[in-house]
Length: 341
Image (cartoon, rainbow, N blue to C red):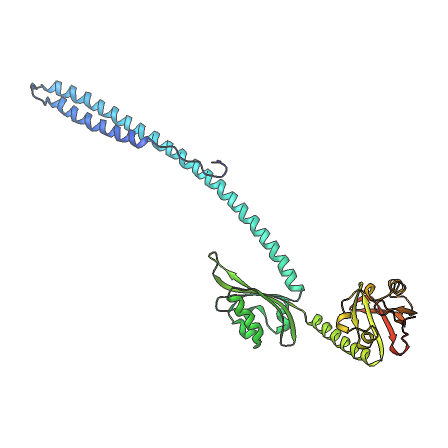
């Protein structure tokens, strides 16, 4: 393994073995000296006082030598252990510094990401909610909370169902997320509309431990969509009431045709919608339609229908269809001419 990643391993220490051996030698020397000094043994002879003193001095010197050797061995062992400990302390200090650097680096990254996250949630009308397994809110963030009349601290530990103002559809979506399924929807909470995503949060073993709700305030977009639908409804009513055939062509397709136009073309509005103009109109009409832009003036011409050969006087005029440039064909039913014989 790399020494830069792992602390240095201490080598086997033989100091304790030498110390035990030294103590053993010391004990044996003491016993042998005792026997030598006092003449113990099978064939021992009585010793005089001088001989006993001389022998005791010799044994004492031997004991001192053995004791010094034992101290030297212990000192060498302790010195070796001190080196190992110092080396391990240096390794530990180095890895502690590296760990501190990594923690500081990761904290800086986390702080930067949280700063970006807060910048988004503070300036974009979004809501992020995290619940536990019982549906209680454990995390709340986003400027969209203010439209609901809540502060972050007011939501913690509250059941999300209480915050939804009794919206049963959203409560059902939350139950689906807590059941392990992801679901998205556009829902109304009070006077506001939210495009929301409900997703389960799982632990390492795949068990659901909560739900994440991410929602974007789309109240203005929903209001614009409602206005557009109302205008389209009015347009369709007017188109049916004028008594003229109306056909709208946008992006190379017929996007709308009223009942009068369908009768003139001897088909139905459903069959016309989504069809391609080249399947119904002659080349002259197609060329004129292709030249129409938002700045074009109304153009009158006689259009020939491919299916029946009928010639129909029409007026081509620019038209704005769902924000796109389009062409509107206005035709009068009573002026349609039968095909030439």
